[in-house]
Length: 134
Image 1 (cartoon, rainbow, N blue to C red):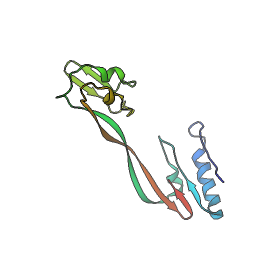
Image 2: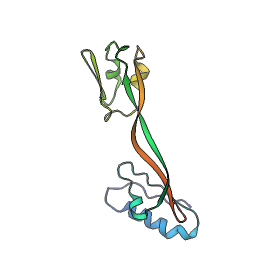
Image 3: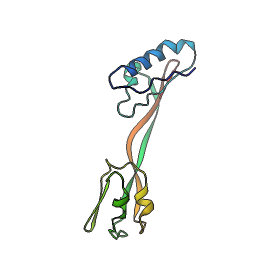
Image 4: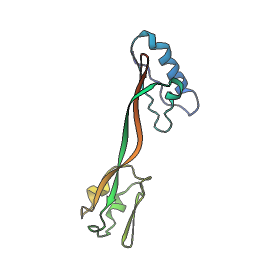
């Protein structure tokens, strides 16, 4: 059986319902609880699982080699999120705006853009009795 608690306005109790369901079903067999809230995953606050693995998550962010760059501006033109600006003889990258699509590095005619990872979060796994927690 798969039960999913998804979507809805913040603060309506989705996490409370999901954790309560997990606790009530733990005696019936294997239970998995995946807290997929990307902004505030907080099911761990209710359950306090033992964490056994932690995996950082990275987003590829452009890094410009200014010795190769001709400042043509193609990278800034293609960026749908305005995460790159070319002004005079300088390329500015705004990592917080970048969505990691890679279009800038793919379309750079000078191959002056590589990608480096920026840590954006952590995926943790653990357990609480018969409840597997992700």
